[in-house]
Image 1: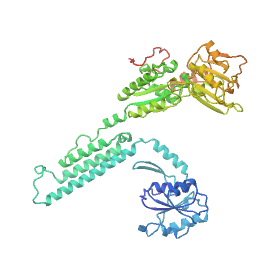
Image 2: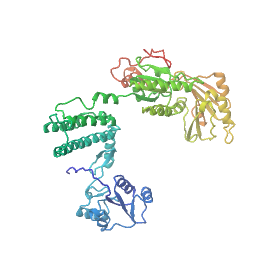
Image 3: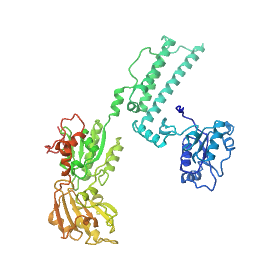
Length: 576
């Protein structure tokens, strides 16, 4: 089949007939409204309207003709300018019905554009999968061969473009229009001056300006505009600002008045625009529960490419040992009473590095959004003009129970998980959750006030926890010195007091704690973790995951891993 003629139709005030009451009819009405047309829905009052259509009818954004389609609708419901002939027809019920075939035949005879769902042979036009960014529109069609595939191709194309490319198109369009306006304004003024015999001498009277000079100036400006649109990288075009446009227009206005015959310096400096795109970047990333092999590939790449790393003090040393020696690490000095001050210090250090054009990585334990102030930090940098890239981390609230042989859910035992903090804002105790026998509750940041927390559970005002409820304290999950204390709410305080504390840790409460490991004693202590050792023999060369990690790290770096790095740099110090 011959390729279709793709066009962009100005549909302002057009009349679109939509025939059908299904979700596709709702989508067609929405698109018509979006492009400035007036949709008229033709469907009997007894039809089952899609909720989107019903809502738009209630909002009076579409007109509803409560009846079956009539042939005269094509020539009576349109605009006055077209002698009441409608501008386009959309049949959403599919092409198998005789009505669809009949409507398509009528529209073809009257040269009215018609689209019939899932019937390319009955259509005179197809709907494109479109990406819109300001004046920029990108349309993809598969000529009726697969709308889902067209949508996917559209998404792939759009994702490869700079996010603010539409703004750049608007600005470059402004430059082109203003250049054209100024050229015609100069021509009109010149003609008027030549016709006015009584006009005084102009400032340019003694300067020889030939017609060829003026035409050369126009050609040079338009040629420059065409060349940057053709050859400049899209990211560079997207970096053009309103101030750049004003500067170009002012320079053009000046140069067009004197009509220079030769080329001058570039109107926009590519180096300046490229440097503007290479501004500082902030990355918020989670380091996972502790073991370095549980880092995501994305976080590992960010660690290897960052110019500065701001790390929580609970990020374990094996993770920090992956940082290249050349990269400064600032470790937060968060201790009781200094958390807010340490956070402010990290913000200041990160902002200073961003202003210098550096890539700053904020490395947090677990997942940055799960009790990690990640959203607060994103908002802070956003208010200063930097949009953070957020990388998820494996959260200890779900992985720690797994490493302790505790399934977070289990059929017939627990069908829901509740993740809570054991410490509220400014250290205040949070409200304890109610007891549900089919629920697993994970308390983070709770071990320093374990006794108070357990008391609030067993003495809950409405739904108290039985003292015999199984629980487990999991400390330093996934690390070689992991420890699990299995007990019940009745004895867990005594167990921690006798065994001591090994932060960071969490508390898991629920019947799932005894699904795989039962504790006949008051408490049982399990030390050590080798759960990932089996993977060491599964990589080529017998080097385990360390060799796999090397392949994930950016090529060309001499230092792949640094297992001997012991010194850490506190906040305020500088690595040399």
